[in-house]
Amino acid sequence: MKKYFVIPALLLSLFSLAQPNSQRKIQVAILFDTSNSMDGLIDQAKSRIWTIINDLSGLRHQGQVPTIEIALYDYGNSSLTESSNYIRKQIDLSTDLDLISQKLFGLTTNGGAEYCGAVISSSLSELSWTSHPQDLRLIYIAGNEPFNQGSINYKEVCQTAATKDIVVNTIYCGDYDQGVREFWYDGAKLGKGEYFNINSNKAIVHISTPYDDNINAYNDSLNRTYYGYGSSGNTRKLAQVSEDANAEAQSVSVKAERSIAKSKANYSNGSWDLIDAVENEGKDINSINEQDLPKEFQGKTEEEKKKLIEEKKAEREMFQKKINELAVERQKYIEEKKKEENPGEDDFGSSVRKSIEKKATELGYEKETTP
Image (cartoon, rainbow, N blue to C red):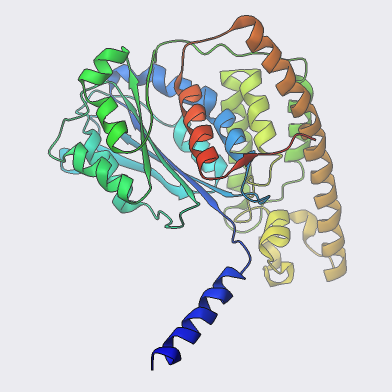
């Protein structure tokens, strides 16, 4: 009887090993304190979000491009209810980079009680975390009040995260030693993550480059290759332009970072853009009601529609390629400037980027090879 069970088990094991490596995921949940004193933190995040996304987009696992999913919570805002522990989930783990940007730029601050254990607990229970050991799963919690506030024990919560290989990183907005005394270091240690302290009121120094204007000009051309379809198509296309404007309001260099992100594989909008829907998700254009198509595609034959899709896809890829080529030179320029200026002190973005790079390396991820 033993042989009867062992042989099939062995065959099943060998069969599993022979399966192709599935696409890995990078999941990041960001938990922001949005009490009165945190305006500077939110401003830093707005300035750095596209740099962080570009770092994530540049990671590879066994040569494959991982899927990026980002979730966003805010906590400690008095406009929220006590029964919710002053916690609000802004967005579930999502690949929709425009929507993530929209939610971030919509954050406002208001005084309240900051319960770190509670918001980490909510993110653990409410989000659809993967269980694959080579998926990168990270929580970042940022704030400036004692980490042990509230009825939910942060020690238990952070230890629970660690047992699930979900890494808890803490970012204290204030003095390093004060953050240690207020248990932010302990939270990171228990969560197998990194502890950072930042000056959240420090203004971000944006490094302008000779490449920014051209990158952004190509981005404007890139936008014209997007064709909204269905009930949300026009609204989402307007949102795409609106998030460009939000980035540009921070600086021209932030808009350039967003433009670069839009040239990468992880910027995919099949839920509303016809080109991505057909090319990336296999949607049959002929299954879409005529009135739900963009006007450029209405009244055309099946062959004419397919030809137009191919033309716009080629046009999009051309602009993405031009942006990518300029992005390489832009990054070289920035690295040289950093050597000269030595910015030193951590901000929100540099804290997140450092820890992502460290953990990704541990799990066998590599940076995209520069062409």
